[in-house]
Image 1: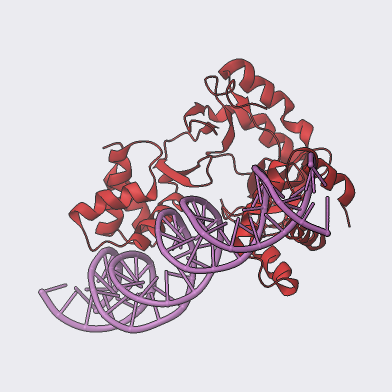
Image 2 (image 1 turned 180 degrees about the vertical axis):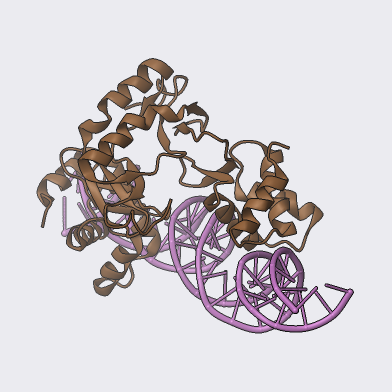
Length: 145
Length: 145
DNA sequence: ATATTAGTTGCGACAATTTGCAATAACCAA
DNA sequence: TTGGTTATTGCAAATTGTCGCAACTAATAT
């Protein structure tokens, strides 16, 4: 269990939201499945114990937990999204378009970029969990261009 | 008309592709609709003149013209994509999560970032038309956080 | 002009995700 | 513990985007 259930529940209730069995099941599933979990994978896991839990609830809950910064959403190269438990420090991803593997970047790599956008464009960039796409060392030779 | 039809047609034919009425209609529609056009908006426009033109063709053609670098694909904040006629120089976007407006950034802002990823991680970042999300000057006050 | 051939299209089915709405149940107060 | 309020769920339908395949047609050579 890589998340503090009691702490999370308190946060949700304080913000006026409810702690439901569905939300706990879905969070546990993401947690158990590890990094870059697809909505469908979550659905498959939770439905084993709770067949009545609907797909719509999975999607809505993943969004909700992301808004609450309990989960983080990661863009994959095919346009779909995956989720992971949000650590204390946000980080970024280099996602390979060919093999879908990824590297994690420290949050700091975008610090100066963010400051520049701030001062030059008055635009506040959301720099948590940005995905960059391209080709990893193994795939760049075969990928052409 | 912000694109050179004859030049584009020549490029396509030289690469072994065909210039079809559907492709021309779709390109004209993107052109006419301006920047950040959704696939559905394109579909609605072209079907007025050519009701038989299918949704699948719109999606396939937008992808195709993007691969040919005649169009550029832009990620919007809700995860969907929009298209625009690709200028000679690629550029990036700062997209506001609240009002969906956007600012354009010169291609050069990511040059050093790209070089850093290259040398530190052996990862070749695709830096054409990257979208960053956040809040523009008008929306940041009301957006909280 | 006509035939050839291979790139494209349209259709229908499918997969992925979102949304409206009525029923349910978490939370809080009494 | 009970009741009221309202956030949340489940269902089903609607959206959005993809895919396989047979029919079609743009481009080229004859």
